[in-house]
Length: 546
Ligand SMILES: *[C@@H]1O[C@H](CO)[C@@H](O)[C@H](O)[C@H]1NC(C)=O
Image 1 (tube, protein in one colour):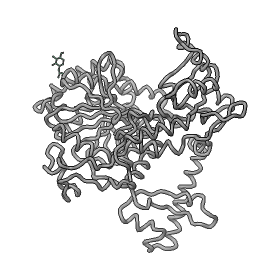
Image 2: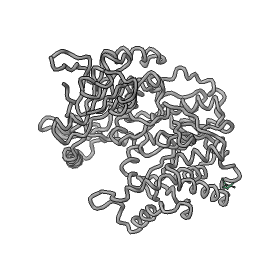
Image 3: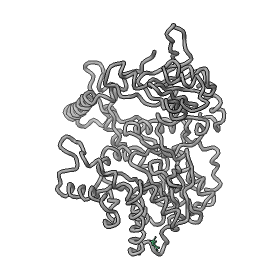
Image 4: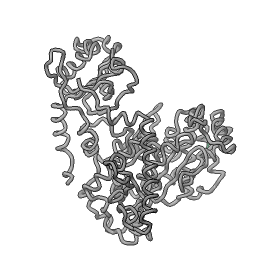
């Protein structure tokens, strides 16, 4: 049986190691700074650092060799050789980020140094007015009526008190304590955020609402919005698109997956003449704060406002808008050739990796240099804003068939293909099985089909299904021998998951013994079947990436 390679994950899991690396990093920085100042204060090209820094790139990384290079090597700080590739900056769409005071510092900074600069207009909302770097962060709850919101606002009050005491939100050990309950505030934010954003940017063609743990494949958005605008005039034809969720028959765009609302839809909710009519806005806010106080979630409340008041129901545009990240996405025929728009539940470390992936793709395809027809130097320099609602006539003739979008396929090839275990496991007789296996791993096969003690009691359950939940071996055999479309399986005592989609999943926490780890779960994949499926999914994707 194969074990997961512990090297990379132990780095992530060990705060001590990370601390040591951080200290080394800081040390090397000052060592280098001191050395270069003392020895060659006028050199402008020492190690290429000063020169590239002057050229305007502020991204600085420390290379591996700086930390582990041969003895005697001067540690160097080295900027990325060719900097981040940035496509044309997106105009005429406001990127709206919703987060909370207790998580903002963990989540938003990585968004700010990766995809946020690809957008011109940005609003960040928390439940406390603050700043992140040079960005103003607005308090989403500032316009919420306390008498409608009821008891939930007590956490908000507490946040305000802590801020005014000026001692910070965290305890001295960095923990947020009972402030974790800040999520209770979240459901009140969406409608006020929409009002504030619309007042600040009343003329934008599009408003894209995401969360602090949402990631974007930002380079896909310009061609995507161009295609969308060609079909639906953003000022005339209302759009409220996202990944549709349903609760009590109310459809709404799932917040973490992101949803987009265009100008025409905004106007249906808040007519032009009412945009600064505070008594109208108060009425609107009060109505939906009241609804929020007895609802679960703010994205649902917004869906209700859009449906009931604006008469625009969300359109399900999954998987462009979707709620998984690279390792939790179930890759399948249904998404493999699709363009990627959003990802959700993205940890900061994953957000960095997704950014690295997008950069690598742009280097491969050159699509950072793509511009629509009618794009001029003035657009490039930001002198003339690009308007999707009023595009130069030639823009509409832009041939998007040649655009190389970043697809789920590309994400699979970059992240999953090299990591999926391929070595076949042996059974107890020493014979090769058809499966590759990882212990202490959850590949989420149970999401597609889960056999468990309750399910196998049902009438018509076959013997192999009953057996499957009794041992790892039987679960594996259920996948290998009894289900032709089964690509992967997951076994834990009493549970056998059988998946016809391809999921990498995540290592399960391993703080105990091997046996304890094993009990958490074992995952298996069938490499020969996976290869065949991939060939067939792949053959349906548009033109090959060079
Ligand atoms: C608020 O609700 C009341 C009562 O249902 C309704 O008459 C009014 O039009 C609503 N206002 C807005 C702005 O939605």
